[in-house]
Image 1 (cartoon, rainbow, N blue to C red):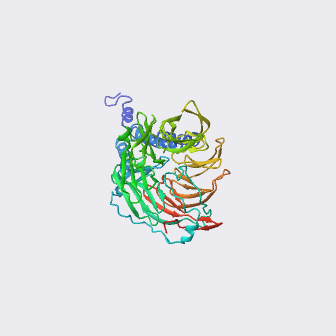
Image 2 (image 1 turned 60 degrees about the vertical axis):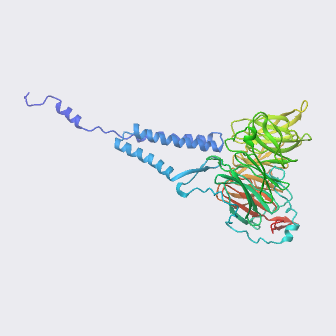
Image 3 (image 1 turned 90 degrees about the vertical axis):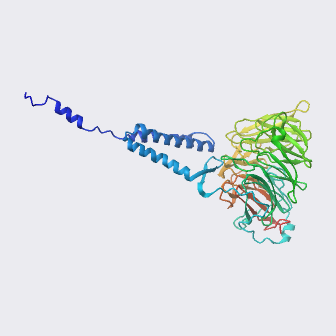
Length: 556
């Protein structure tokens, strides 16, 4: 072997060492991880029994995990060169930063779907202005309609003086509405901007009163039924807001004997004059009785009965529910050792005795109307808000419902030892889960929104009659023989409430924004609102077998 010849194998080794190693990008690994999301989504939406809002939350978690997997794969598992890895990571982080830099989470729907708005569009919050009248967005038409029709219309005399109507049960009688909305559609009388709130309207004669948030103040505002112009306003410093719950008051005022009573989101109870809004008296319920603002804000509308204003104060040491004098605001009685819920107190005649029924944080209780002694208490699962109003079914039975997967119970109150009374469950059903929409009763059936879908239950057995029509987390109101459904989307629907199945009679778009507020009806006017605007609609009523476009007394 020549001295100049290289050692055997040296050339081969040099050739191997100079050949670059080809490292393929692990796309199969990446897409294999991403495709795992498909069976997860199928399980969430088709195989797993869950509430719709829970499915949305679980879907969000899946997409977050896909995003995190993309970041992990790019940095550690992709085999991309480091410049490409850092570039891809910068793009992923940049997309998120650009989105949240340009948009903000404004609110969520009742199913926890996020609603975003452009960050630089400016806050929509109305200013805490003076008592000037707000300009109407659209003026009403033909305000001076036939006065004789109003005078002769048998449904034109009823007020809507409190939350859920005269009996606080979501029903109002005396009016037969026209069922054909194609031939006789609702007519818009007026439309105005309002401050943020989930309040409804209380109506008497020619006045409609609601609560609003304007700047850092809560307002009690009285509007004219004629054209929506502002008659008076009363304000005080208070504010409550959250991304999930929204901003502003949550209750509806109550009107009684020339006075207006209201409870704000932070527990300010006000009594003002109906004629001019002048303050008569006020109470800070939480300061007075030692309670605290619940997570979603104070949501119980005041009950005014027999010279007393009854409210849920959430106080400790037997001060959960209190009664104050309607004229002076003095404490008449305080009772109950339970946390505050989001439902409103109601009056019920149980076993021949007048009681105040409260759906509180851990159950439902009955108190003597006079004196406030607690007569009975029925436990209810905790861990979720108790919002919907109980329904009085008979002289000793109540129907109670809550959302978040629990359902509905029919309970029966019986006489016990001394003043105490006992409670037993007659039936339970998870086919109606009233989150914050209030079910209504017609005959032996109850109609309500179950996870956003209208459902009908048999009151005798709890059996589901039918479930149909996704209207979201809106509200319902039984007017005579028909059901008004205020959909979460802002549409107003007319439904024939029959146990045979869903019969949708008519639908009109009213508002474009999320609508959670309870509607009001003072024949022939329906008042609906959300956290941005309020609308007054005139509905056709039937008189002597003929549809009539009537004008409510006092609004000619």
